[in-house]
Image (cartoon, rainbow, N blue to C red; front, side):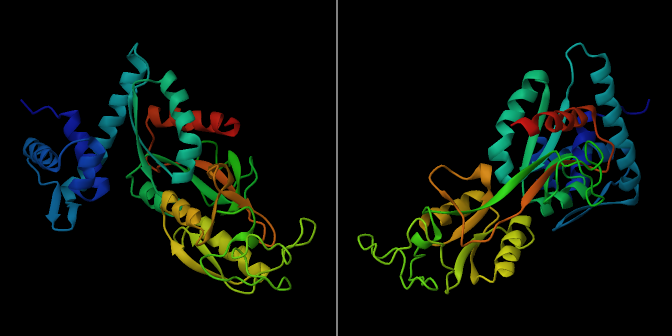
Length: 330
């Protein structure tokens, strides 16, 4: 009698195949790396085939492993479909969901709460990363779906640059990018040194009691002559490119003083007063300020849901549909 295949072993195998390392697969399935190693060995013993080439840098599918991957994915998908169709307990399954950190802070709690009340048996694992990294993870099938950014797209329009969204390539919401600082205006920032404003003849932040040379509320802010220190995410992030493009178009001097893909890190630097940053307006903490002129206007970002190229599970479809319906109203 042929051995029966354990679904847990198939799940671990699929995760390891897409992740490329057993340590990453262990995190995704909630097991130790040694347990994952034993599960892969059990599966190989059951099939009588070696499924992975192992090396110090990770694992790579053998020819037999590559052929078996398609079978394993179809078996797991059929299993989820069957459970969903015939179980009286409703939709079940697991989703690995990718999302930029600022969207997680602004939207995910409400999305998770509302989705969880409808489908309590769907497990959602979250991967936080910038949009370019999420797109790579989607292509590698390491995540099932993601909420990603796209430059300045009006809701309801389409673009061929982001396939596999829940409704064609529709942008489901737009968010305004904003300059953010620790003081209400750029003029009040000294960035730990003297910043001279063209035409103003003053050094900001060093003479709180002396308002003689401060621009009045009615006067137009002057452009800075010294480079403005910026705290931005990595160079491939849309926020980073948008900030640099805006400063260059306006002819304002700037320098990238701090770089971090962590929103918490950017917020910490901004709070220190050593630089200003760019964030989604909805994610700006209450103790920081949205800055306007003389800084140039920033574009809006489109938000869209993108699913892996591989056929999604019913749980993935349900969560993608839920996001598309709920996000415009949050």
